[in-house]
Image (cartoon, rainbow, N blue to C red; front, side, top):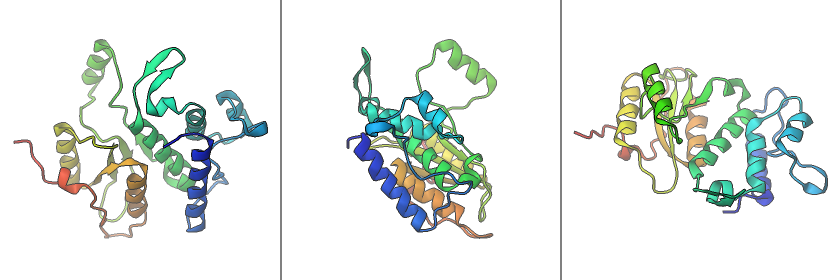
Length: 219
């Protein structure tokens, strides 16, 4: 998949369909994905921020990706060799979608930066402060149906949840949260859409990938 301007236009077309089908843009936020300059050139991050009063940092990131697909696919970038980073960009797309289609709950969702390269000191400091391994990537503190909130572990390709992640998903489920293991943006969007549509007392039917974690123990 090429993450260039063509990709962004395709993503924009998806946003239009969501809008037509009732997706909410509240507060006047546009459904465009990236801010384009003259001659269809992608604006720099600073110019993009100056372009709109209500700046969407996720759209800015996606514009940067469109200009530099190597950021996702891996390869040489500004003299450095980058590894593929698919899960990161799937999550960027997810929060961009939340920002545009569900601004009423956007501030109730956050990412948990559990991955990434850290020094030993930083890792030790985080554990000292109470950071726990295996916590899901996406947290939504929104009460819906019979649940206290939603938690999503986001994967890509053939990646599997670790034993710590499986244990955490099960523990959170037992404590009244809706949890899902989702492969990519589309599955995560589907889970969140269903969750947000729940009425009081209802439960989610989304059950993709449950066999990989629900009730699974590493004993």
